[in-house]
Image (tube, rainbow, N blue to C red; front, side, top):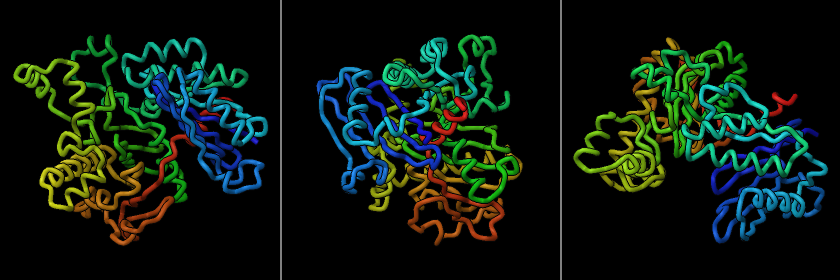
Length: 407
């Protein structure tokens, strides 16, 4: 048995999965949240058949607790108690390594990296590029090393998959000395998802990933597009931060920088106001007052004008990136939708690719509307470009990369 524990830690919460790598199945998963608040919460779910318990109802149940969780170290103690009390036994499924999701690795980290004191210092130093993410990841790493001191810990960076971007793709046209001094460049995000999905799409088609040009659309509350040539990222929509690119739940995506100067001069908004506006008060939320695409679609179906416009803006931006990346790649073999919106919204998938038949992209309406789980083709049999829906699994990708690093 070869288990890997995957940890995705934020400043006040962390998610975890214990994955048995011989079968790539999740044995247990959980969430510890509201860390540092007056009362914290935890949940722990055990997959069927992963304990010795006879009662199947216990095997599939989610156990929830509410208790003070002052810091991440206490949170990991709560997690260990959940494994001890509800399974699976960590004696029987002891992790051979712990994999940690870290959002920003800058230009420094281009592959999964065994955590050392020097790596921890680098992650901390890179927090200036991801102040909302890297500090929480570092807290999780510190607590996890204390809880699992005898196994290696591996940092897997969201940005690493995009370290293959060519200079013309990652370079911004600003003063070169300033850019180098303050590390201003495109880094890209959702790398674990784009990596997993591009290879899963190739596996679904039974073709080597090296033979394919792909466009992967990771559409969730946050969203990004990636052009993948021969399994390597060559262009992606998110930039130095996750703000650039598509219209998202609360993020604006692409915007004329001059708008910020205008709002500062005329509306009196300072830097913090503008940061909050573009990251937490824009996107679908800014256009409609609703940050969840499902609510926007429901309102649009009821005739709400702002919601109808928001959907038009959302799709317009998405289609523009598909066309741009088609041009960058020269030809496209596969377009894949993934993540919450990409996997579940036939409306968005259909509208995003509508009218692109001249590019060899033809959606089969019946396949697109089918409510089915798992990887599937939604293009017609005679479509020159194969269009897929592939459920992403970033935790499994982190576990795979972790195991590959520790052997």
